[in-house]
Image (cartoon, rainbow, N blue to C red; front, side, top):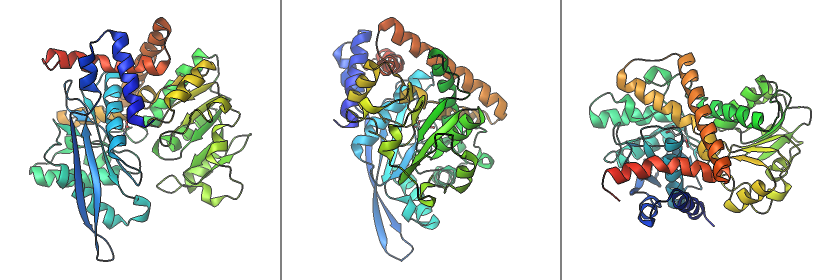
Length: 410
Ligand code: GLU
């Protein structure tokens, strides 16, 4: 089952549980707009390479659509569509005035030069410029994109728009209107949720054994936050392998040696596989990489007490059921990873008002928002007797369905 089909199945169940008629599902099962673009880029060897990219806008009843752009060889239209639906759910869960959007370009930025990446980033913005904008659809970073790429995209859009438009995109460098705390926001949100989940399970984060899959933006900051909080990070991984030390890894050393794509295991001989990493003995497991990592095949072997999804879509629906039946507390992606878009929202608000907050102010607002969302969803799961993923979808779709109804769309 692909990620879109499985996401739709949970959206359908959530809407049924909330008592909405089938036409609401018919509207929300797909993006209202899906743009496919072709982007020609002059490569360093003088040749022209034409890349394919997408921008999906799931539902804009609540407000402009919002969501990141990923640069990855495995990007597909189906994946971008599912990712846009997940963004709508995140916005609903943390109560932002947005709908969901998402973009992706099929490319491997690990094999491209700085100059080629700039050309690709600017070309993408030219190709999608008619459907995006600070009050229409606001991009942000995602897998393998960063603040430099956001800066190029913002500059390109500002030229097209003939205004300085910082609110066109979030995740920018601070000097260009970025927000304090945005870079580490996803990991900070995950840390807050881990603390809440640990309390529910009577686990002390200090001393807890944690395994983190992925050492990109979310995984690397998260390993630092948990390490500093006294947790023992016993396993981490990147796309090429994983590291394990039952006594706790030297996180500061690994962070120092990782490259900008989160690669670090290549420096070691004694690596284990990503499959072995997921099955390690630990208290808290955090998949923070890509989709479909915990499946019906390995869900029975997961030893963690709590699984917190920092990545989008790391656990299949079959695996969600297996983990839940085994009594493992699964905190779903649309809740756990919502810290990123929350601080993106703060960035956009600051750009719109032209007045900027301190990191402490951002932290405080993020904290309040994540705790509230966690408790709402945890309590919904308890009272409705459903798993936390379905509870999160129920909380996430409600505002969008209501807004679509008030607008007279359904
Ligand atoms: N790409 C991030 C996500 O999947 C952040 C999106 C945003 O900041 O708009 O949630």
